[in-house]
Image (cartoon, rainbow, N blue to C red; front, side):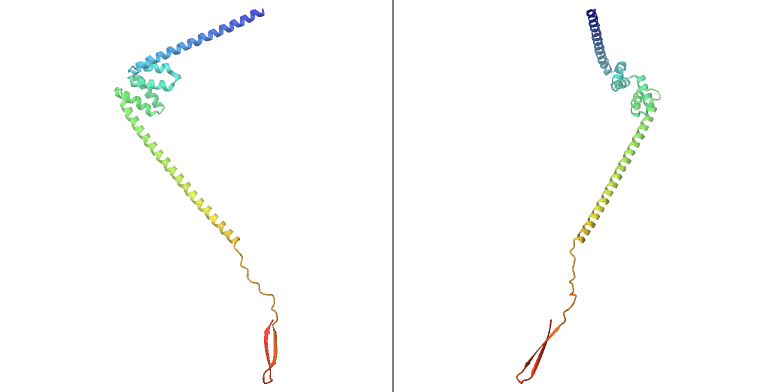
Length: 215
């Protein structure tokens, strides 16, 4: 019984693996067929077949939205008026002026009613938008200049204050270490003067006395 159970499990695993391999081969085959089909349609799209461009965009779908969008626009460029209308209306709803101008310019070339007047209005809006953008950029540049100028002025004031503080500190140090002038000390008392006298006889026999002050 144990041997039969193990054999059944092995067979089940083998069948599962074979099914997965068949599914993987089928997926690869579908991808290959899709790639070949896209390449063929792409070639026709490049030759000016707008329907082929739409088919390429549909096949790519969400796998690569940017690439699908390029083929969708290519369909408009190659003459699909309905595609241009879809792009134009969608772009207007999203306020996407650039893609709206792209779509309506192609419709205007094909003389689609009201497309040329819409295109003129879109170009006017684009010009106004460019003017506002330029004005905003100029205001931003002025603001950055003012900020930089204010920063430089603040740094200049800070450096001046630091230099003034340094001068004050050095002046204080010089005063602190300046030698002190000491006045001479007068004697507390003065010795009394003494007078010394010497008496001598001169040649005439007279007595002469000489006195001299001293300490």
